[in-house]
Image 1 (cartoon, protein in one colour):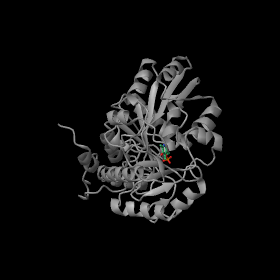
Image 2 (cartoon, rainbow, N blue to C red):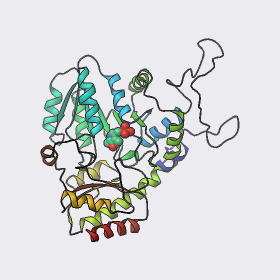
Image 3 (tube, rainbow, N blue to C red):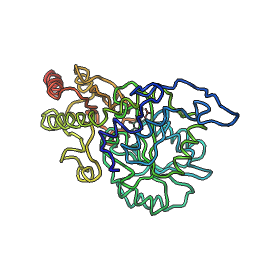
Image 4 (cartoon, rainbow, N blue to C red):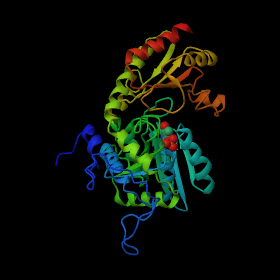
Amino acid sequence: MKQWGPSTAAVHSGVEVDASTGAIIQPIHMSSVYVQPEPGEFKYDYGRSMNPDFYPLEAALSALEGADHATVVSSGVGAMSCLLGLLDGKSRIVMPSDVYGGTYRLFQRIFAKVGVEIDQIDMTDLDLVDKTLRRDSGTTILYAESPTNPLLLVYDLRKLSEIARERNVTSVLDSTFASPICQNGLALGFDIVLHSCSKYISGHSDIVAGALMTNDRETKRQLDFTRTSMGLHADPMTMFLLRRSIKTLPLRMARHQSNAMTVATYLEGHRKVRRVLYPGLESHPQHDIAVQQMSGFSGIVSVDFDLDLAAVSKLISNFRLFKLAESLGGVESLVEQPALMTHLKIPAEVRLAHGLTDGLVRFSVGIEDADDLLDDLDDALTAI
Ligand SMILES: *Cc1c(COP(=O)(O)O)cnc(C)c1O
């Protein structure tokens, strides 16, 4: 059978009419305990290991990511925690210097404490990546994230996964910023793709969940085993809401993208703007790589305003539609100032050295009418 397109898969994958009632929407199984017909004979035993609500969700996620398997977990960080199950006594994670804050905290403060070596390197330097992976350090994971937060740097994912394969290293990609609609890391050669489902995949700012996708059956088995062993499962209500949200993911992403492009183009021409970072703009430093490895550019736009820290704070507090909040990927437009919010704990010298300027603002462009978003930006910029 020909494979469904993403919009069909988003609506139908894993969804079956309930046999006992004919309900088109599958019921939520709010049960932690399952009765066994005979001792030891069961499909489900206990809510931490398995629940019927996992299936439609994992089927939809694998269909959208182009994966054979998906494992749904409690959060994006829970998905990273699951990687512990793939490591052993002598292990190492090689990752870029600009990973998501929660990733840095988990790997550097928890994994490193129990002996996992953490190497943070510049992943645009492919020779350095190769040299680092060549060093024998036991079980190694190459961990990449693209596009990055908040500078929207795009790494060459095909090349990175190739180097990992040559060095016999497991490659993992955090593809949260792209969503499965704009980027499919397994097709680019990665062994595992992980997502925070708290962002675009759920898309309504009301769920915390995560997922890992892979084509390897043994990896899926290990991830499931780790989920059960470490208590990283998602709860039935969250899984129900997530499966429901996924039905509109392709539609939402189409609007996020076109709105983001409109906002990026408008701001790129504004006199109070120094630089706009959006992978869909030709001016983006890795635009060519983005075109090759992404099927869309998603909805995050970062802007370096020609304003000081205080003026930027004032500007972004004056928006009516862009709500001042961390996180991203919801239907409502959000705005945040990395220097005072998501990246506040980074010392100013380090932050500035990494290009996180005082004027930097990250927009998560929602699915509102583009004209209203432009009016909101225009009014606040005129007032400043
Ligand atoms: C939010 C986020 C995470 C963490 O996900 P949670 O669901 O909040 O645990 C990981 N990576 C990226 C890129 C994110 O944006």
